[in-house]
Amino acid sequence: MTLIVLLLGLAVGVLVGLLGIGGGVVLVPALVYLLHMDQHLAQGTSLFILLPPVGLGALREYWNQGQVDLRAGILCALGMLLGGYLGGLIAVPLASRHLKGLFGCFLILAAFLLWRKPQAEHRIPVSTGGESARG
Amino acid sequence: MRDAGIFGAACICGVASGLFGIGGGTLLVPFLALFFAFGQHRAQGTSLIALIPPTGALAFFAYAKAGYISWQTGLLLIPGVFVGGILGGWIAKRLQPQRMREVFAGLMFALGVWQAVAAWAR
Image 1 (spheres, rainbow over the protein chains, first blue to last red):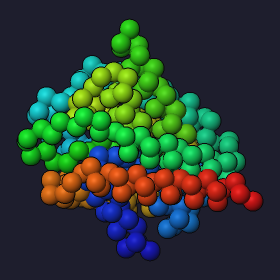
Image 2 (image 1 turned 120 degrees about the horizontal axis):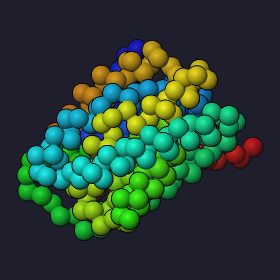
Image 3 (image 1 turned 90 degrees about the horizontal axis):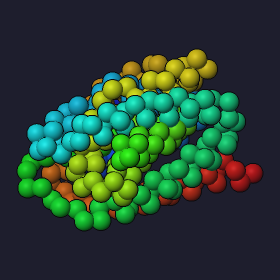
Image 4 (image 1 turned 90 degrees about the vertical axis):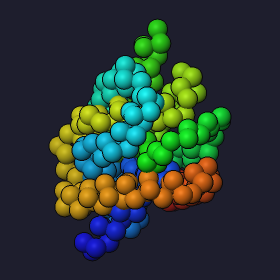
């Protein structure tokens, strides 16, 4: 059991670094299906994991290339903090079944966004440590 | 005006973050790129710096108060995700990320359909 969890974390991390998309998006369904967690428990645990700054290593690469808009970043952090509170308030009293269904719909939407993301991807010829952006 | 727009978009990402227990970057990166003319790298870098502070903290407390946290599993997962992230970055340099994204988008789509159907088709 412990080993499975450790390996799951490793696998999720690899996907995060590899694909530049969110740990939570992968983690929640993995917790639901592999560890048979309830939807609420999986989402709460995912939020717990995302509290420490796991993306710090990847950020350094972007920062060194000047690919960070600090002002926009701070605004986004504030907005997400507030929005997150609202989202939490909505999610907690929802029936687990409906939350699970909504999450499924969100995954479908995220899949489309992921597919169309690089419209004009200019490769920057510097050895970036992966195109990581958690979500 | 642009600042207000970015703040508003981030609020929407935040609602998704709290509602679905995720970071929010999955929405934030395409939002910045599509609506605010950020380049792909700049969008991802900005998303990363927005995620350095614990933006999910308020949502986290809402879940914690309701008892929806598995502390043990969470603590076991954190080191794996961290090490895996470094490993993934290393692999990404040697693979075509575009192809990987397409494969993964397909996987996510299938998972999403499965989960929605499993939840509601009864």
